[in-house]
Image (cartoon, rainbow, N blue to C red):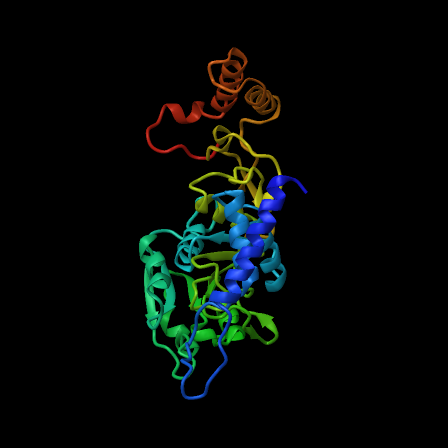
Length: 349
């Protein structure tokens, strides 16, 4: 082991010693020991993982994030987990994902979303932030979930979605909710921030609808300090959610240099504009399908040439880089003549 490796092991040994001295749980004394309704539960392993990440000084999502995605995905039985910085952000990303123009049947301003009146503020807020109309329903005494017997009364011609939290970990009667959503062709988002691991009819909550959210705040079942995630079985929705999380960057532009969960090459941001060709997918997770987006227009030889010049020459002042950039732009402009003559935002070719 080299010098840095030895130093690392010394630091880890000190962390273990510090945990034993500062954080070892004290014996429970009836009538004296204070009981907390919730909070962090940890030992030296969590402290070592935190210190290990700090020593690497990788400041964005890295190997621990990828491992967490994979393990949580396996636990929930879903294909895609998209970590974010809080459960509140997860709710915003989930609702905004369903408003994406990449969906043929997207939510649009003025559409109504059924949600309970007894709820967390940031379950309600994303509905308003996306200029949708919340239709508030009373809760059921005892479970404090949405009163499913009144769903028909909340329905109108503008109803497009249900945003359903499983309050305090109590699963809502999902057979009736799913039946209602399917009958009326509604999107279903499940807020499982209180309910990680809860099941209904032996199925994990969060796996009944198109999207679900979870929080890792210390008061919840597991914690990353702050944090949350969106999860789904729909690959298109996962791609849109990642793009929203990453400020518009597409798959393959993650901060760790890989695609989703570190897969695939990192691509230039220039090659991820939204002027892309529509492509119909048969299984959208919602009746009627939806519109996805193909590989960016700047592709094939132009993309390969552009990327090769970036790797080879680096700064934009290099001639081959500039030539490749010009070629990529010319390839992009092939799709644009129909739009140049009219004002307003560009539409898909």
